[in-house]
Amino acid sequence: MFTYNNPIIPGFNPDPSICRVGDDFYLVTSSFEFFPGVPIYHSKNLVNWELIGHCLTRPEQLPLENCQSSRGIYAPTIRYHDGTFFMTTTNTHIKSDGQRYGNFIVHTKDIHGPWSDPVWVDQNGIDPSLLFIGGKVFFCSNGGTGDEKGIHVCEIDPITGKKLSTSRFISAGCGGKCTEGPHIYHINGWYYLLLAEGGTSYGHMVVIQRSRDIYGPYESCPHNPILANIKLHRYPIQATGHADLFDDGNGNWWAVCLGIRLLNTQLRHLLGRETFLVPVQWENEWPLFGEKGNVNPQMSGPLPAPPEPPSYDITEDFSGKQLSLHWNYIRNPDLSRYCLDGGLKLRGGDGLSDKSPVFVGLRQQSFYIEGIAKLKGSMAAGTRAGISAFLNESYHYDLSLEQRPDGLYVLVNRRIHDFEALSFQALLPAGEVELRITTDVDWYYFSYRIGKGEWLSAGKGMSAGLCAEGTYSGCFTGVFIGLYSSGGEACFTGFSLMNQSDGIRYST
Image (cartoon, rainbow, N blue to C red; front, side):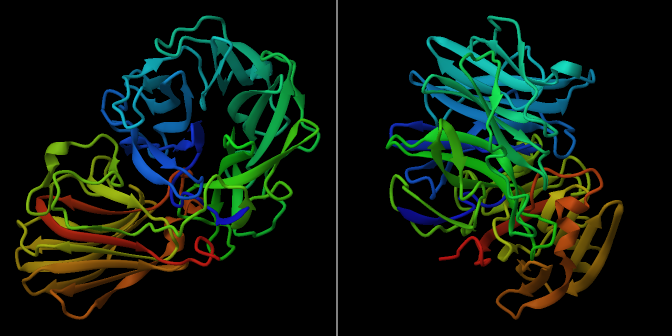
């Protein structure tokens, strides 16, 4: 038995799905409006995860132009069958004809890619999943209306996306709202239907049903919900749900699920929905999740291999030929505006309050971080560039340089709802400049320095301004720490992001 810390993948990594190939585990999560789409993580011990690629790396796989924030890619499922990896998900972005793109499948023989172009499946809803059994492949998703609002299943060819049977309604769930996230498993002669209910917020939970026939009827587990932190008032982990069940090849069962970590036990979060791991036991042919149905910051279980101390720190000097896998763009990027040539050159673009900014960012993974960007201080007039704590175009804090006719200025810009204003500005002498964002659970702090001089304060902004609960239309993502430019070209010569102890993630 080993003790490990939750979350196992911190920062914005919701809707986890997992598959095993031998003693290798592969996990994918949702990516929404960010590009590339559907990050792929690899682990040998279920606790230490390495980002090894993305399923959706080409615009033809992932059209996101003008995508609304918190739309795009929802709830992927990854499965492995007969030498091939399959990933199915939903692109909820709305096309020019007013219809959303819908459910699709991609596949590959090599987990590192490239993955195929998508094949679209004529079954509506979201959160699709696949089950391979007895030479057949079943596709399930939520959807429908009226008395048949819930989970639907059809037989499918996963290579072509062609349906081989009509879609059949099989379950309305267990009585909670927003029945979604379906996964079907065939275990010991039972078809288990694992579901998320309660909405992906503070009422989120996991429920399960079973049947001897994939098309039902399904009976509900007598101790549903099998996973929910709802009753743990102001517990640091909340909104647990949307799980995927699996065995580790050693006779042990586990589940991965999403959850959020609260800021000082207040009902707000900004890191996004993260990935958690819970051990699973079986009793009377029903699964028992976690510790009395709860997800805890520290848990124990028979991991396949010993866990190692994690590190999420990243340092870049931009001397390579391409950015590392950790960097993300907002929607489909115009790559002609990004260049590695004596540093990272970001060329013009809209501001961060527009839908097509020139921006690359990394997930914020701790409440306590230090992000530092180093820029050359010479830019064309009208150029603004710097470092940002970015949730979406309506919620971001930016520490930047701006070249004006009378000199180079350092600025702090804050955008909350429809209000945007500078809260700090100062004229700088010539030279290389470093811009720094540090955080705690209550504040984002901004500072700057010229060369190797002292750090000078540029003010602060409340962390509550970047919390999902305070957004005007809701938010399914989390904060990124990133670099951007607008107006003209800027050259970044270095970047570091240090994720420090937050008292939960690194507990021992």
